Image (cartoon, rainbow, N blue to C red; front, side, top):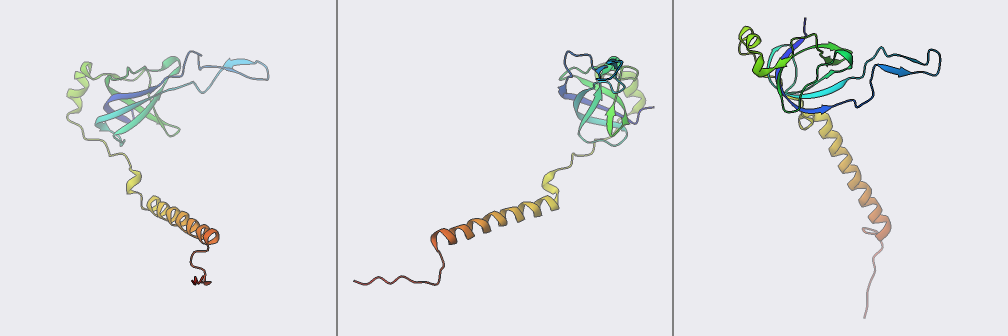
Length: 162
């Protein structure tokens, strides 16, 4: 049922904190209620192998709330995730497991494939054009202000005589 299945190493975690995210406060009665949108921890993976779906080499997965799966920083996992509201999400009810304990899954899936490389801003031609335009604008403004301040290039000439 997963949209994405991959193996990867946890490189960063963003834990929610001490407050239970499934409790929300409101100004109107009943004032305190169970939130529909649970707080979610975000874990960033350096993906090594992909068996299902299309994801980048650096991918984040959200989990949390009462059914969250908590990944250990530096750990290597096989992750089963689904797309929900533009994010990859996972939880305890999937087959997530530490990679060293996922022998049955690895044998069933085979070798897999490499993830897609992350998009780079360096390969973005529009970004390059904007950067060149901004640089030329700054240089043009600096030149215009220098002419105003110092009169460089004015048609008046000063003659010095002895």
